[in-house]
Image (cartoon, rainbow, N blue to C red; front, top):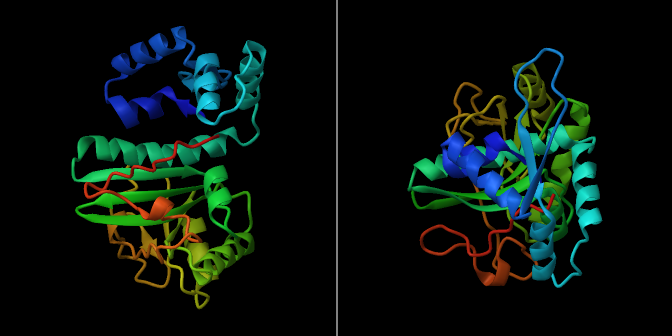
Length: 270
């Protein structure tokens, strides 16, 4: 799990100096640690990137009944995160979820009640490999979704093929959640809608283009609908599926409590 200073501030604080002071204190306790990337040649500021520190890793391991991390292992883990080839993609996915957390921080009628990382969602849901999975609660309604954060490195047929797994999940008794494509350009969005024309199945699909400061707003264009009419996240069709052991969206037979806040919230693992 890696978050930038800005993402943490937006999700939890809304006051940058207070956020920086808290992170510095937690770093001193070795609960978190940080790295910075090289300054771009074009100039500009460089954000800190934060991950679990040595003590934070120990607590995480204890919760999983695993052996604690050594100081050397903690340093190596941080170095690997800093040089991870997919770091930009991971931060993009995390920015989507921290944006929702920022909305919920300022609006008491909303909550991001679940945020599952790619490894967690892939492990718990069969046949699908989303970049993230969430439950968004707004005005008494809880909508599930699977996120596909597209950077343009995959061709359109590959994006279309991904939907087969979600259709299989629904057919096997899993949830029927909208698949949300966050796309890097309007042209990419138009081309994906064209590629999906006439190929829709049971699973709803919606798209938006970045930047998306508020993913809960009316920024989602349902595939097969009026492209000029965009919907709020809370207004997208969503079916949690049957309450059964085969459906991972119902841990212990419970989705959320009556406030919409999930007692089974899982922090992303990577």
